[in-house]
Image (cartoon, rainbow, N blue to C red; front, side):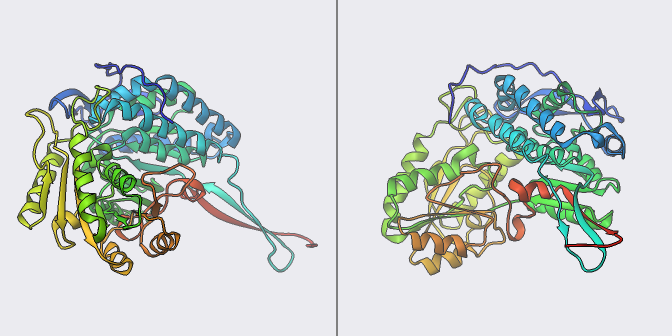
Length: 497
């Protein structure tokens, strides 16, 4: 539920730009920095210390020391880990306005959304996984003979977490919270585009009282700092959210180093299927939000909207109307729904894919160009008459571009929905429960929404099929990703039932 939104801090103070290792702020070993750019103005906000392999080595050494047998962290009761996590949640909510303002400045997303969704999403992660800290139990197993056999769910060790730029604060906590609840230690690399809220989070982690070395945050670039984490022989697991292309690189790095475990939440091209018997107004509105939420910069974006032919034309009209009414502008304006895209690279990529849609025969119904003359703003764009072979129907655009495709039958649309390398999410809108279950059980996707979209909670596992990823985040499945199962067999004088 949305709460009353306080005014944003238009120019939030930039409090932390250094690397966070062992609960201390340090400069990079190389002395280099990198700029973080405001996507609204295209101007540099500040310069951040640029971590690379040398800094990652220091962070991993600190994490390894914090994870040593007999260390304060390893000796800490699970219930106490939960208390620290809840305290972290309290501090985040204390500073909700500042964090949301900083996120909006650095990322370009509307402040209202950052306040109502992004920051609370991070807190939900912290509180949910705090509840798991003292519930990771093993089993006793009645093996034959005079033996006592049991299992332990042990923390995997040093976790390398690599967070994306689209939900910088929330996804950082989506990785840190379960890792800490399980008893692991963390080296986090935030996205180089959006490091500021992760660095502020580090200050709260220290304020809470987590022991030194338990959480370390190293801002830097993927090919240097990110690669150093993935290739490090003392990192026991990598949790990554980002593109499929980078996911493949991380898998290869694991194979070339120590075969560390990997969890990958990658790209998507999610089918959103609307049957003729659906509530048309509701389905069109939900499909609009499914695509344009967060300026289309969402891995589960409903970016292939399949509409049954009987209602296709009317659905397209409604979609055009919603897109034209969606406000674009200053993220600190509470009436604005869409801010800019994250950077010039994404801006150019999206405009290039829009151009390919026009060239390949899709009908541009609205939008299609730059919004304004400053910042990385793109007009809300709708294409109709899209076919499955077009680039805009196959590639992850990650922008405010809705593709509406026509289908005839349920068998037809299920086959087409599955004809993709991705399998992150899907949705179906219908009043027929048989159709709903048929689609939900046939589409190859990690999450399927029925008569809804973007309904998510930390208690539900989230992840992809096929090239949309490996492993799960959220729920018991998510925290188990940070555990190793150890079997212990003890010889006893005599076993009795």
